[in-house]
Length: 150
Figure (tube, rainbow, N blue to C red):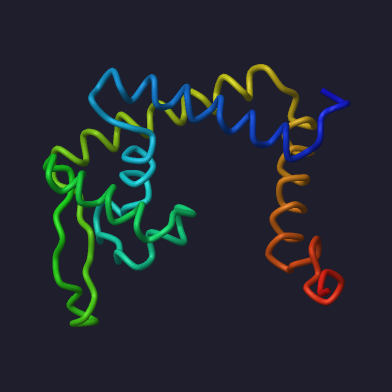
């Protein structure tokens, strides 16, 4: 893989992970996006709907569609936020908590399998490189706006 670009490796790896999770989720009439949303909701206190998009890295329209589908399937319920009358908190139903436990089990199984097949040093380097990439993107250190102006 050394002759591949970094973005190519990231993209193809993420697509493989997405496909794997979606195949597992489809066995239970679900999707990876639903599983990720279930894991992003605090099972006790609920989660503000506005906090979910950034937490999951999803656009508002995609998140809205996912939440609407989850609500229709009885996985979540929306309640007014008592601290902010304009906001909504997303809570898991009992059914949603069961599906969340399943999603968590699948994520932990994936993590355990990767840990068994990599050294602690390899994993540490992976996390370090991912953090560098995220920081460089967040700080706009790759495509500086001034450099690219015509």
